Length: 633
Image (tube, rainbow, N blue to C red):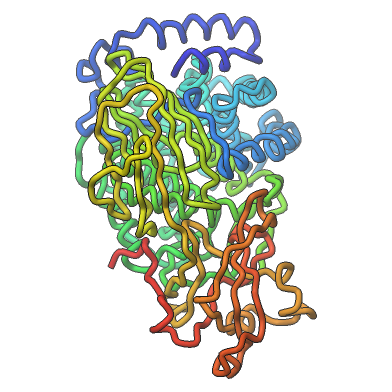
C-alpha cells in the first residue's frame, strides 16, 4: 500500500470512518518498520505467526503503482464504466440481504464486493469507492448478532446448498476492503461471519458435498493471515484439511461435482497460499496435477479455456458449454500465483493466452455483457444476467489484471510479465525509486519500448518474459543489442547498472502460424499470431454463407492456404485491432487446382460473432504446422 492508495481509499467514505481509517492506515503504511510483517506489523516477518517457510520469487506491485492502457486497460475501463456502474445494486445484489427470507439461490454479492473494492483501489474513482462502500454498508448493517451475513431464511441457513458459498465470498470481499482501504469494521464483520460458520460446523450433514463450500478455504486462510487467530488456521488443518484435498482430475459432471474446475482451482489457490507458510509438499501436488492435465494431457484448449459444463474434459470439445468464465478466471489467478511462487515465465504464457482469448471473448467489446461459457466452435451466447457466479468472477479477475503486468523484488529486481501500454513505479529497499513507461500497441504488433526513470543509478536485474511463440525475439538497451541467448518461453534477464533515461526495446516478430489441432480437432489447424487466436464470423465473410444456413461443421471443412495469410487492420473487437486475410477453398476438391475459391477474413477470437476456429489444410504435414507452444508432452 502507498500514499496514493491511502488517499484514494478515503474518498467517498463517511467522515467518521474516514478519520478512523486514516489513523490506522498511517500506522500501517508509514509507521511500520522496514521489513515489518504486513499482517501484524511485527518488526521482522520471521518474528510473528506469519513468517513464510517458502518465499515468493516475485511480489506484486500495489494497485496505486500501476496504470494500464492498451487492450487490457480498455477492458478494465469498460468493465468499470459500462458494466460495474450500470448494475442495479439494490434490486439484484442487496435487497435479499435486507429481507433474509430466501429458500434457495446464489447471488454473488461477495464476489461483486471483491471486484468493486479492487476497482476502487486501482482507479480511485469516487463513484466506484462510493459503490463499494454502499455494498459494505448494506451487508454490515444487516448482519445479525450471531454473525450470520447471508440472505437465507431462518431454518434454511448454512447447510442449504449455496448459503456458505455466498458468505465465503462476502468474507473475501470484506477482507479485501480491509486490505486495500484499511476498513477495520469490514475485517471485524468478516471474522464475525466466519465465526458463525465455525460455530455451526458440527451441524454439517454427512452427505453435504464440499462443492457447496466453495470459497471457504481461501476465506478462512485470508482471515488467519490478517488476524493470526488459530481458529481460522485450524479450519484448514482439521475441519476441511487443505493438505488432504486432492481428488485428482475427475472428468465429467459427477453427482458430487468432484470434477468442477472452478471449485478445484479455488482450493488450489488456497493450498498455494498455505504452502508458503508451511512448505508442506502435499499442498502443491494437486495444482501440479492440474497443470500437467492442462498442458500435457489435452485439458487446455487453444483459447486458454478448459472443460465442458464447468467440469474437466480432455477431448478438445470446443462447442456449447466450453470454457466456463469462472474456470477461466481462476485459471488466470492460479497461474499468477504460481508465477509469483516459482518465477516461471511459462505461467505468464498461460495467462496471456487465456486473457486475450477465452477471457476477453467472454465479454462484449463494449464491456456491458458477459458470457457464462465461451465456445470456440459454434455460436456464443451472453448470460443475460448481471448476478450469479460467472459475471462476478469475470469482474473480479479483470479487477486483478493491474497486479499481473509487473512484479518486483524489494531488494532490487523487476519482471515484466504482460506487454501492454502501461506505467509502473516501485521503491527498492535502499530508497531507489524506479519508474517505468511501457509503450506498445501489443498484441497488434510485437514492438515494445520500456523507458526507465531512476532517482539514482542502481544495479538490478530486469526480467523480460519472452513468449513461447516468439522464435526470433530481440532485446536492446539504448539501441545496442543485448548479448545472451534469448529463449522463447523463459525470462530474459538484463542485469546491469541502470541509469535515468535508459530505454529497453523488444521486438517479437509476429507471423501467422497454423497450430495443430488435437483429439477432436486432429487433422485441422487454428490460425494464431502472437498470443491471439483468429476466428471465422459470418459477418466478416458474408459471401461464404449468405443464407446463414451452413453448420459449424460445414464451415470447418473449408481448406486454408496457410502461406497466403496476411495481416489487415480490423476494428470488430477494438480500435487498432487486427484480422487475418487468407486464401481458401470451399469443401471438396477445389484445393487440387491451386486457385483459391474464396478469401476469408478471420477476426480476433474476441469477435462476438465468431463461430469456427479450426480448418483443414491441403497438405497438413507440409504447411508449416506447429504444435501449440503451451502443450508440454
